[in-house]
Length: 146
Image (cartoon, rainbow, N blue to C red; front, side, top):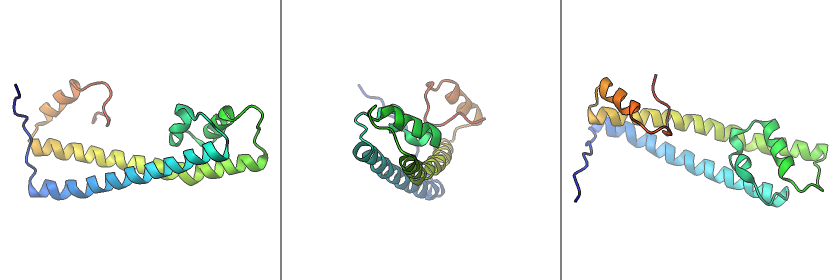
């Protein structure tokens, strides 16, 4: 047996704010995925890293030194990067990570704005929003508002 799920119809104003934000989030996601694929492919093919591991798969969460350290740990033990190789690693990191980090920050801002617009569409009061956050699961995609 199914119960009806209340889905709030957005007002024209809310819809006009939501649509460009969602479009931008899709664009950011596509760009980040392409950047991830490019750098990870380069690490596997040019740096001879067979198994990337979680840290390299999420390389944009690392700083440049952590990235280099993780690449060195994942490379075959017989290969040690030369000074030129280290420079190449740092340049690769700088060519991708800052853009992904900026995109992630922008995406978080957009997701918070979308969450607020959804709450507005449902006509939730501050007390209802607070209750929603108090009963939310521990791993939410956005942080709880202060």
